[in-house]
Image 1 (spheres, rainbow, N blue to C red):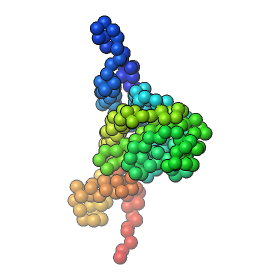
Image 2 (cartoon, rainbow, N blue to C red):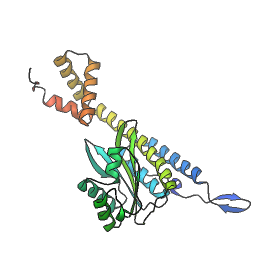
Image 3 (spheres, one colour):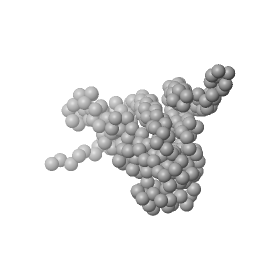
Length: 252
């Protein structure tokens, strides 16, 4: 999946009194997000969604040199759609040290913007290490819908103080769009997987219905709740239950 070229081009083609002047930034950003949304709607795929988002964000958020998404899956965080190797390296560094803007954006549900990472008091160990690797500024957004955090979108720059308050507002539009697009793509993927594995899910429901004397709707809700609690895909939970059907919980 790719973002249309016209969505990535910076339009400078408005003619006023015979002169060419830059397009309004707000209109430009709205056009980009609209083009991205149409692209994602045409082919809902999780990986394609993330690559389209980081490509568009990198092209339009002032000061950004690299971008990537830290995705939360099964309780673990990993980097996806990095636009450069340094993105993966910096994300791994944060996880290893247990500190950094991405870690805090996911855990504390805030947006984080740095000035000069070499002198960042909030994450001293990470800041020094990141600066040594050529990254001096970061802008990190939590990706979420309601209370469901799916990860973080991060922009990187080698220049000190590369991101301003205005830049932060621009990036927030991409982060909001990324959150909605990711959740939508994940739901599509889960639905496709559920259809593909419907026989296994039906068997798991039958096991729960017999074991707990509940109806089909209640058994399915139990599977969904177990999936959310374990942060596993629904069909994976169903597969585990079918594979371990003879294992009964201990009696009180």
